[in-house]
Image 1: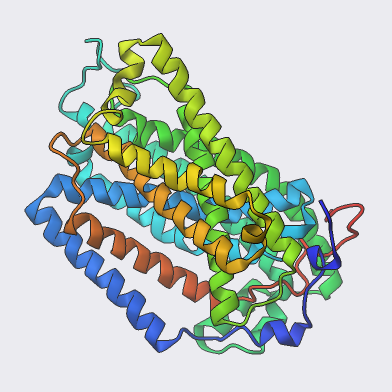
Image 2: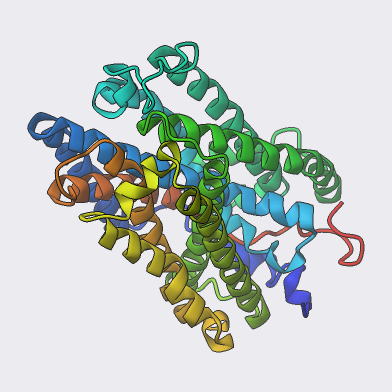
Length: 430
């Protein structure tokens, strides 16, 4: 892989980067995002009244999609830290911003308890496919939400610790351009600040320890989420590969989200600080994980197909028949087939607009994939894609957008003295 100085050094002067910290959200953008969130909240309430199961399953689909995207966005910086991937270290702040949604995600998980009776079939029918009782010690509502609340708290705390130590070296410089609650927040984050070199070295040491912990927690906790919130929807179904398929899907969606967001910020905030080889490397990473995700999908499908065991085919068979077969083909095409054909071309990987278009296709495919993973397990009457699913998704998108806008209007999106950037390109960041 060819490296340039743009791959590991700050790509612009500090004053140029700080000039891109607006300190507020555009009125039009805030109105659009707020309207989306409000429409979503109102539509969800009306949906609960009109068709509660559809409303709650749409809620779960979007919770899984946006929460996985948020956690994996923070993981991108940890991955650059672990792999010493200098090409992406100046991009990690953009992906890291997805983590601003995590506090809302935690609240949304707790609110999911109100709809558990509409989602989890084993609550009213505690018998699995083969007629044997499910293990009550694991399959009970209190246990599911207690362990979910505990483990999500661990993951989200690690994410915020990583974000804190990543951002801390830049806080005094950013504070000079802010006011109000943003100024108070960055002042708190920069409390007891020493010199830039001292803080960068300290953050570098801490992040070097946090990165493997965050990566391990991401894998373990999203695997648990896959078991509790997805696999349990089909009582009796067994797949040792599905948790890996699930968290790799969230990771790929975050890579696509980074490509899309970086291109949007380049256009609307003049954040044109990335060299062509950095876009190329990001495109190659998206391309590679599209292939790996398809490999995991096929690795799960093939043994189930040739084994033809009822306990394993229980999940796949439903999605390979009408009316779900068409949706399965569409999401597979959006996530793998079309990106594979498009990202073969170097120009698509190196041109931000083209790469962002492919990334948007992948994100759309992953929303369909999460929908196709959840809904057929608990809905028996056709494919419920209508106004309820649309407005709930708009609501989640609006809330996610507000969280990201708050992050982008407070913190520098390109590192100044970021400890992930500082260091010799030969020896790595720590």
